[in-house]
Image (cartoon, rainbow, N blue to C red; front, side, top):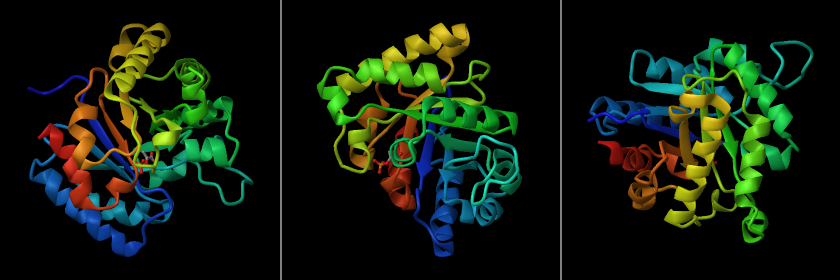
Length: 252
Ligand code: PEP
């Protein structure tokens, strides 16, 4: 039976991947066409330099493309930046905004993340908005209030389940091999779901909430089987088709 909302497994390649890496994307396409991910929606977010060539190898197939960031403006004198319209033109249909590596490394505020998400939606891209607490915030018992604040500040009020995905990614779990307990993940996702209901009313039930942070084939079944976990945002384990499909394969 197909699940509602449709699960989403997204791979974030970060600053990894040369042209040779397209072979992995070809292998992912074959696996998804062979139903290894069941009904789940699969997207890959390679670096911007690979989007056009990845779009060519994915054309007409079941995997969609995402980007890892966009500028809040549609165009202009912003050297080195890429607009949402350019990403759409290159073949993307999603863009990640507010990843903790950008919030921490570039001082991106909730307001900036929201303006990027709005720019994405305006250009016809769905925004995957990342939120998550640091280790210190969790230890201080502030995880839920920090994440709620990020959600209130970063989500465009006009977004819909079709163009908004929330990714809960505890900062301390990203790339560390550490994950929260299943009950901590379930509690956080329940609180995010309640907040989405406050913001979007009934539509809040259909906004997908992904878990991200050291998801791998060995822990995917437990994490993605939790209530209100509608898929995963995967970093390191998305670079190789076998690992990525080992995660998406829980929906087969
Ligand atoms: C990420 O970068 O979004 C992420 C979840 O990374 P990893 O899976 O490597 O922890």
